[in-house]
Each structure stands twice: as C-alpha cells, then as structure tokens.
Length: 517
Image 1 (spheres, helix red, strand yellow):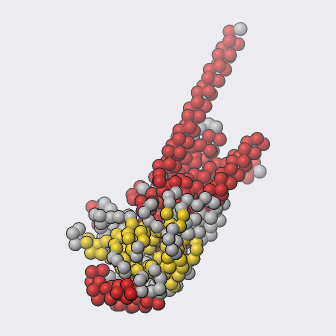
Image 2 (cartoon, helix red, strand yellow):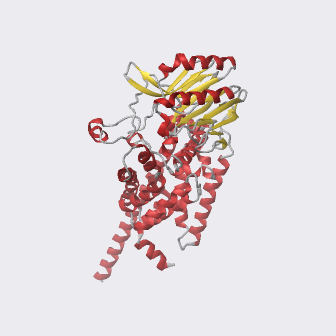
Image 3 (cartoon, one colour):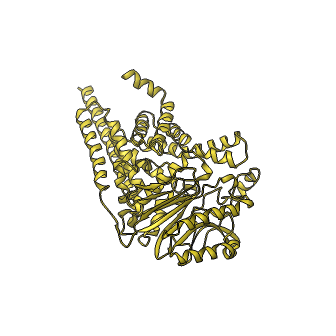
C-alpha cells in the first residue's frame, strides 16, 4: 500500500487533474453523486502534502475541462471560426475558471494548520465554499458546476432549503474531509469520522422530509411548448412565419391549459412589429378560453435605444418581464474599449441587450404571481429568491439550443431543480430544444421532455405559499457559518503554533540545565 501512496504523491499533478475530471461524473447526466465527495477528498489528501496553487489549478483544469466542454460546441457551431480558435477560446476560459481552484490551493498553503484534522474539517471545506461563492459573482458570476448541484438527488440536498446551494457544497466537502481522515491509523479517529459521515448524511436526509411551503388554491393546468427550432435557422428572416405558425398551432391545440409557455426568444422578431397583426388576434382567442400565454421575445427600448430579452404575458391581462442578469460576451460586451476591437475580428453571435430601469422579479398573469427568470438567471439562487414570498410558482425559460446534444442541457436542468428546492416552489422550465420540465417543490422532476424533439409537456402544478429559511436570509447564513468555521480553524492553528513554541522553549531550557550540570 505504501508504494502505491508514494507513487500517487510523486505524480500529484496528474492525480489532481484526474480527480477533477472524475468529479464531473457526479453531475448530470451521469449523476454519480458520491464522486463529488471522492474527487475533493483526493484533492484534500494531496493538499495535505503539497498545498499550493498548482495542485488546485490542475484539479480545476480537470473539472472544468471536462465539465464545460460544451462551450466548444457553441463557439465551433455558431462562431464560424474553424476548429483551432474555438479550442483555444474554450481552453482560455477553462484555464481562467481553474485559477480560482488554484486560489483555493494557495489559500490552503497560507492558512493550513499543522494538524491534519483542522485542515480537513475546518479550513479546507470553508475555503472551498468561499471560493465557490466568489466564483458566483466575479465578472457577474459563473457558478456552474458548484459542488452542491451534484447532490440534488442525495441526502445532502436537504440542506438546500435551510441555507442554500453553498450549504450543500459545504456538507459535501465536510464529508470529503472525513473520508480522508478514515485513512488515519487511529481506530478512534476512524470511528469518529464514520460517525460524522453518518450524522451529516442522516441529518440531511431528515431535512429532506420537511415541507417548508404549503399549497393553496386550485391546481393549475400548464402546457410547455418545445418548438425545437434549430439555432442555425432560428433567426433567418424566412423562418419567422413558420416559427409563429408552429407555436400558434400547438397553442390552439392546448388552449384548455390555464397557462401556456413558449421558451426564451421563441419569437425571432421584435414584439412591436408583430403585436397588432399576430399577438392581438391570438390574445382574443386565449381570452375566450380563459387561458394565458407567456412567450419569449425581444423588446425595443426606445428610451434607452437598446433591446431587451423579455418574456411577455397575454390573455386575461398583459405582463412583461425583462432579463436582469445578462451573460457577458453573448448578451452584452463588457469593457468595450478592451474587447471591442478583438471581437470585431470574430463572427461570434452577440447581442446588445440593455437592462430595464423598473425591473421586477415577479409578474402578475392570469390571477397568479409568478417568479420569473430567463436562461442563465436561474444559476443564481440569491437572485431567484427575490421573487419570494410573493411568487406562487417559478418559471424559467431558456434556449439551450446553443449547446446541442451536450452536457449543458442536463446540467442546466440540475441547476433549475436546486432553485425549486431552495424556494419550496414548483418551477416550470420551458426550453426551445429541451430539456423542458415540471419540477416539484422538493426539487423532484415531475415531468420532463425529450432532448432535441418537438414536444408539448402537459401537467398540473399547485400554487404555493410560505418561506424556506434560505428564502428568508439568503447566502448570509452560510457565509457567517463559513467565516466562523474558518476563524475557529485559524484560532486552533495559532494556538497550536504557540503550543509548539512553548514545548520547544521547555526542551531548550532542559538541555541548558543538563549542560550546566
């Protein structure tokens, strides 16, 4: 056994990279959630011997290089840049995100204690999750593949309504630390570690049985229309009328539903140009059947001289929601003086969306208050809970056609499930090419559509009321807990150093006394 351990430590960089790559298998669609404990456990074990930027960076390179490989699909298929440039751009982004894992490794070097247990249970898990939180807002945030998402079907998901996604990540990294302590020769420590694993998993399992919200009112019949319009032809001018015809025909076939949802930018045109001739006649038909329609379309903002990515509701009343959290380089261009000249040489499809001055997280449609989000917005739990407690259910519309048949649609569905669990609300996820889904308030998939197929998803949901603890306090609860834990670890680190100093002084004094004799 010892020669194997020595070999692994000798090739620590390769082991760290493979540990990161294997962690990807914990996320959808593979969903082997125990690997989200073993991957970080291997990293923690390596960091005990060789803490530093390099070890953490290589782990991040393995995780992100395998987990967000779908970015290449989007750039290669729609950027018209050949093969080499998409590979370089994808690698550049992967390496950029991996640097945050390098930061984690560097912090472990700077703040790690002499005693292994302090590192594994107090310092490493807290630093990991704080870096994850940092990743959720740096440059508007990229929280994709946060460790907690992989646990949506595990007992650890029970911590999500309590303190949110990062609490689940913390529970997972605590378990990873405990797994490493099982390698100690001490029988007592191994028994305590096993008890800790059972306690964390058991408490999470018990929390999963708590219903933080309750239903009120009659069930709502919903229809989610997945048009499956290929992204390459979606915005061709000649495709506008066939697209409108497809969606309107499917809508008329399901106008017995209380709420019908088309996906993000389902309408490949400007709303004001189509309102009178298309949407107003459709609205009259919906009013006759007492139904409401929510559809994605681009709005022209004449005041700001820009465009907005929006969801518009028609039927019993009209309502508008505009996207607030825009994606850099695809929905707006940050640092234009720096990146503008570079982007001009590429043909990456880009938009120049603006933010609505009077943005609201909810809309009123058909007598219901709906918490809205568009595409990438559902990756930010602290933003989604702004719709609560008013929202009776949540709606997220997306267009994952950019990423084809890759990991991205499955990972995005996993993210949406976490948002439903954190909020204690049903979440309706309407997409252009899949995966559309009806998600229950426990994060469970009630129904889902196939990927890359035209489909209408029918079902019923219940309006909900009540607040989860996370919806009340947001990320503040877990952040306070993490800083408290890290402070405790650093305190023990300093007192441990002080203890060793005094032991050394006593040894020196004894030696001096013996020499005097």
